[in-house]
Image 1 (tube, rainbow, N blue to C red):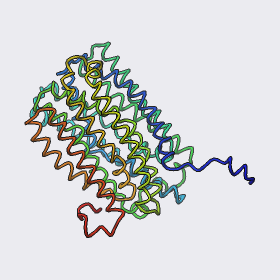
Image 2 (cartoon, helix red, strand yellow):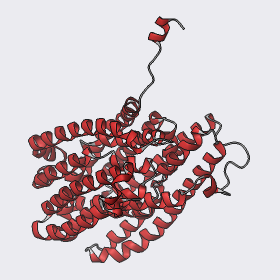
Image 3 (cartoon, rainbow, N blue to C red):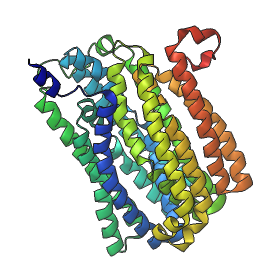
Image 4 (cartoon, rainbow, N blue to C red):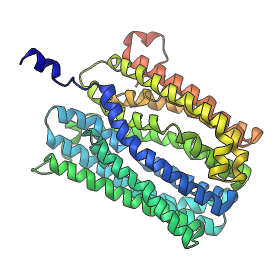
Length: 452
């Protein structure tokens, strides 16, 4: 090779650059989806009114909470174990992991459907739902069995097909928008909008599986004898059950931060309060979508870097992504503080402007969360999901206590401040857990509870 040829040769793509490229694909889909979501969110909010939208938000929160509780983060299992088998050229073991993850998704879907029906009839009266609302919540919760699409998502991310994942994920807001417009034209009301949401999830899951299956066929990962059996699963994939259960528990804890506040605000402050809180939550997290996309794209890079490496090898990547996310978080806070009232007025109308203080505080919490967004995927990638679980669990216990006290004392704004305080604690605990995972000499100093 001549010196000129060596100079002109493309430089190897580093993990940050590759993650940013993959995040750009996800963000492209999320960007268009974000515009669509503003349209259908505004349509539902204005059509149903603040109280009706609050009821809609509570039913959504109920269904999504169930999906989080029973759903396994099977995409993490596919990437965690699939990365090793791909590096070792063991497609038969990869097939085992994929079948295992698919069965986890299927089992979660069936369990979630059964719990949804029973739960709506038990929880509904306690939070003031009418019989009609309980029936709607039961049907909507049952439909969320279609949201379990972790296995195909993991396949696309493992193979760096974030472009295909972005196209598939764009299906969700697109079909929601079409369904919402249809429900609006047909005057479908609350039931019509819930049906639109349910059908959108079904179509999105089908699209995701179609894209993943095509990729598997293209890479010759679905043929051959013995590739799809589970015999010897734990031998070729040590710790896979523990990993899957731990990541499920960690994700389930996330529902406390996402869906429980909406239900709690609706219980204490009524549907109108829940509607305002939901609107603030949607807008407060919308501006942090770029970092959410980066978090999803960085996990496969962490998984590859952790194969045979030290956890400390991830520190430079974590530091750089933290600076990027902190800058985006700060920009989000400034924008919401300056224009939050106008955004609420534009999207929801004058009935939602009362949620401006809640929107500002929740945006602060989102920005704080962004600073340490890479810590949890890093812990999972290096095989320490238990440490992430303990850190999240401790912060969640504090959050529940703060939410119970501050919501009754201060109303919806109290729930927002509880989120902000607990988010800061969670970030600190995850940082300590990651540092502990990479420094065995800190064993005598740091709490043993944060070890996996």
